[in-house]
Image (tube, rainbow, N blue to C red; front, side, top):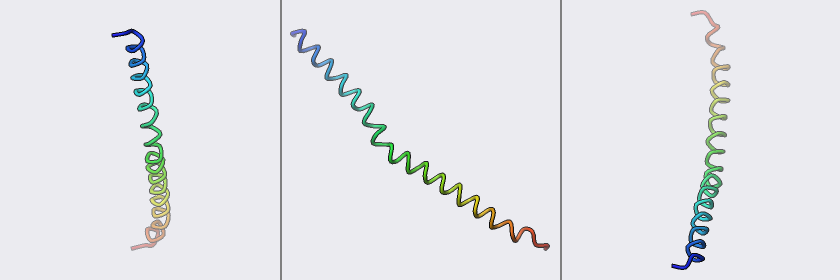
Length: 61
C-alpha cells in the first residue's frame, strides 16, 4: 500500500467520474436537440393546422 499508488488510483477515479459526467451530456446532446426540434416542428404544425381550420368555422351552419 504505497501512497503514490493510492493517489494515482484516486486521481484516475476522479478522471473517470468527470469523464463520465462530461461524456453523457455530449452523447445525449443530439437526442435532446432532436427532441427540441421535434417539439418545435409539432408546435408549428399545430399552429398551421389551427390557422387553416378556422376557415370552415367562419361559415354559418
